[in-house]
Amino acid sequence: MAPIPSSDAQPDDTPESYVGLDEATAERRARSHGWTTVRSLPPGTIITLEFLAGRINFEVADSTVTRCWVG
Image 1 (tube, rainbow, N blue to C red):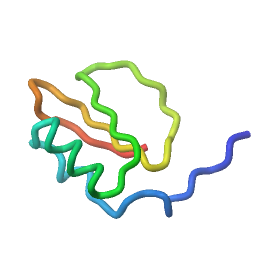
Image 2 (tube, rainbow, N blue to C red; image 1 turned 90 degrees about the vertical axis):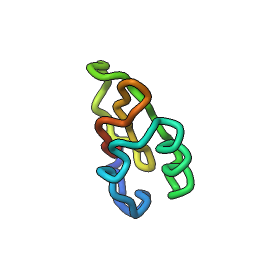
Image 3 (cartoon, one colour; image 1 turned 60 degrees about the vertical axis):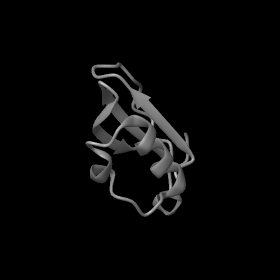
């Protein structure tokens, strides 16, 4: 069984603050805040639900972040 992820690995950041930013700005900001993996996805993309500490996910439509979550 995989270990339970530690919340200590997460940057102190607010995912909601990325909504409305353009994709490039959001990625630069996320990396500067300490996110090690930044993933941009189009709306409706099918993804697995595994949690990865240090990852932030952006749902991007028309080059704008419309949704953001961690893991």
